Amino acid sequence: MAVTLKDIADQAGVSLATVSRVLNHDPKLSVSETTRRKILTIAEKLSYTKKHHQPANQQSTEVGIVEWYPQETELRDLYYLSTRINVERAAQEAGLKTVTVFADHLDQIPTSLAGIIAIGKFSQRQLQQLRTITHNVVVLDHDELAHGYDSVIPDFHGGVRQAAEFLAARYTNIAMIAGQEKTRDGEIVFDDRQQVFESVLREHDQYNNKLFVTGDYSEQSGYALMKQLLAGSPRPDAVFVANDAMAVGALRYLHEVKVAVPEELAVMSFGDTTLTHYTYPPLTAIRVSIDEMAEMAVQQVKMRRGSEDFTPMRVVVGTKLVKRASTKK
Image (tube, rainbow, N blue to C red; front, side, top):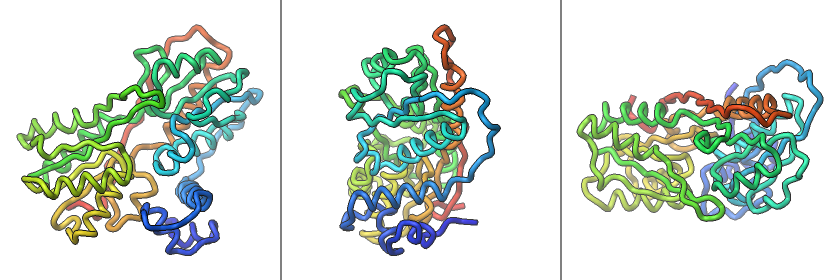
């Protein structure tokens, strides 16, 4: 059965309007961070379909879950909030005890861990710091195989190519709102989503560098960049957005200036977190299987316990195109 706003509101003890405004990142909403966190967590948990696991036959051991964001920043990025929740759940179901540490408290990581799942983007200095605690470090959502770390990632190349092919078959002036990130200690992280998207559009002779803009993966950035794209020339008739938070911001600006979606401008996102279900119109998106990635990361860290002599592995989890009302069929 589909999860409704009422289900979330009932569990959170707040109004339907509050739930809707939190999930749509309404900047004018005055609500406590505790309430915001509660709503986002409930929304994510209700959207999860529990999988059955065999009981763990090994003694429970403590594993660290290290989130590359500070906790307050994580609240503004449902992708990483969802990833952490799913890792914690998968670890519990696998019989592992966990301790969660956020990026601004790396010095508080226990030194007796049997393994660490590092969620997000970390500099080599940060990863080496984690490896002084345990050799068993699995990086989730970023490829660190070349540096000797087990890595679990979504199929960025396949997913972005599918998005580009989908839009190229339906639209002419295709834009991209891309993103750039930095590690906690200031190291720029390379993200090849923009390069892949550009490459596919070039294959179709539809690439225009004036329609490519880059932000910081925040809702506010998506809003500002959508405004920038509409003020320029040529005007796009479709935009691919690198994550759901920026897509929500882009949609908010389009609603404010009364640009009809998808009739005048189509919007497509990458991630397909719970946010995409509650936007208007609901977002067409490339779905990243966060729950499956979390399970694979837990399997990796559990398998490596007690071993320091192993060949690192990269696990790539497939993506899926989910068609909704923000694009043409």
